[in-house]
Amino acid sequence: MSILVIAEHDGAHLKGATLNTVTAALQLGAEVHVLVAGSNASGAAQAAAAVQGVTKVLHADAPQLAGMLAENVAALILGVARDYSHLLFPSTAAGKNVAPRVAALLDVAQISDITKVVSADTFVRPIYAGNAFATVQSADPIKVITVRGTAFDAAKSGGAATVEHLAATPDSGSSRLVSQELTKSSRPELTAARIVVSGGRGMGNGENFKLLEALADKLNAAIGASRAAVDAGFVPNDYQVGQTGKIVAPELYIAVGISGAIQHLAGMKDSKVIVAINKDAEAPIFQIADYGLVADLFEAVPQLTQQL
Image (cartoon, rainbow, N blue to C red; front, side):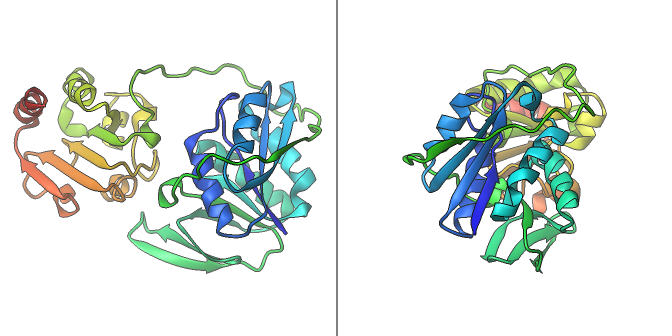
């Protein structure tokens, strides 16, 4: 049977996590379809059709699908689910919102956050905040899976899939999109950035994050933060990296004033090169760092920025 990937998009473009999910789907079988649900999302449907390895795009376009409301999207997926052996979602906030509903309605167990495809029914996923990995096998007829994007390469462009219209299901009426606020930034998006500069509780306050912004501007990097910094109100929630935040795996991760709690490490330890700056030589972050600098960040970061 075919594999269906549920796309995450902004109406015109696919989100990066969708391309990683397509790569995971291609390891399950050659017949990979992508579902693009939204309102005025024809651009995203065409982008999905151009992904290498995708053979068909199902495009459902209706006002009630704007904002990817979970109830409406889940009902749409349920209408086509029986035609597929696997339903794959990016392991993002949107994917984690819809996938459990679909699994419950299909009466199957969800397989969450996979990092490796062993076979069509066997997968590897992290447990204990990434300190161990479990190999899980599912006997369910339809497998509902969320995919950790950082564990798979992004699918390339160069495909020429057909785009097929899919009738949208009626509005459930149980939820509505009240408003949406998007953070505007000239910096790269956190989960897609090649370089990430993150600050923790050691930054002291939100005003001091300007030190990291100056460094990030030199490196064309995204800004991240630990949960401690977010909970203290230093920076917005969408900066959070960690088990309950965003999972990142950039080429370079610079952790400034971050002690290295296990929950934070779970969100960034797959980074290619990790640099830690902390005045506490015993901080756990140094155990996984490739390069460590024991220094006062308020002296070290401006010096580093100046040198760059």
